[in-house]
Length: 201
Image 1 (tube, rainbow, N blue to C red):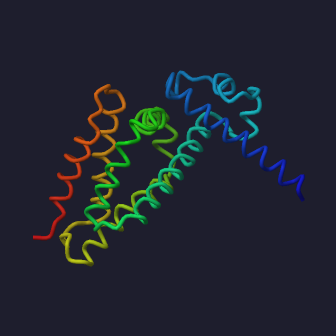
Image 2: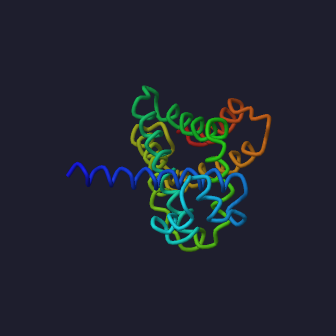
Image 3: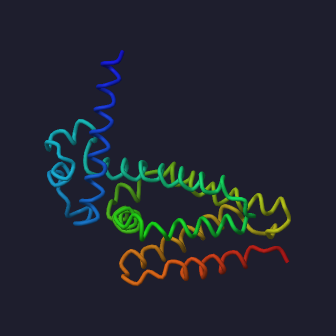
């Protein structure tokens, strides 16, 4: 049993190395311009090893997205669970964490905002289950606020979740390519814009 677990851990480690290598390669050269051999080089594995874990480059892109979304969701859920603030403060935390990606994880920020759009297969066929989980966090914050009577009842939580993510994604795209991030100011402006529109009158 110990040997089986050891093999499984080795396989998981190698898969993770490939994902990390792909993230660096995609951020540096772009999805279309990156060769599988370059990903293998980044990961420190043979070219053929990539295909033991992933069908092709599109499959690798989707797997990388799911892996990183899992990390983003876990981090967001942890921060929100530890927050003593009200629903508006929680929304500010969502905005703050999203924008901090540009500073803390620039490769990941570029991957999410730029490289995913380069895969026609991803944009047309992938159902984004983890992305829907992310949106559900935003929707639930709005629903709780509505139950508490502090957020307008006429706001559609699903529409709000997508609208907020769209705004965050666009600003994150700008921050990704900007040397002057001004994250705190951008966070305040976007949070104020959406929160004031939510408040019950």
